[in-house]
Image (tube, rainbow, N blue to C red):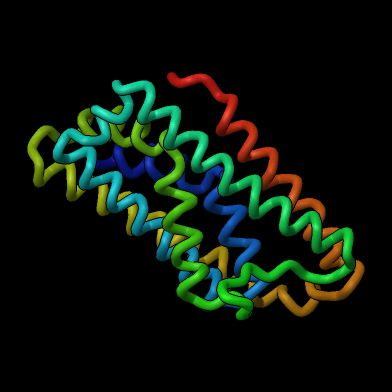
Length: 202
């Protein structure tokens, strides 16, 4: 098992910006550092589920069974489009969109759930884990351990993002800046959702 290669590939994938990074940045600005960190925790939790699913063979079944793969893909895409539309609406109305639950502002629980749904709704994680992990391990324990290492690396990286963005939050929350931010990130989330929905399975 070449662990150096595993760490290199994992690091490259993790630092490449995607939907989980965009969501972590967005929630760090909406709810501060704790919100961003709990989003990162939710993302990593979703990856842990994929790691377990890969270890026991469920992820491979999802990848192989096209209806399940497509259903999961459209669910994840709809979720991203929904969050993006909220941000765009906030930019148009000139106020910050806050994810709400029962009329209350965003909480760490909401941020955690959003991160979890974002990752679990991305079937590309199933494709990625079932392609990557078996190259470096074959037993249940080895596959799960490698998956959890990947989750931990993701958590560290996204948490660093949350801390950095939260520190810049005062500047980014200025009215003109925040409207531009909401518009740009809303468009990014919608675009990521549409790409997820239309991207062919590999």
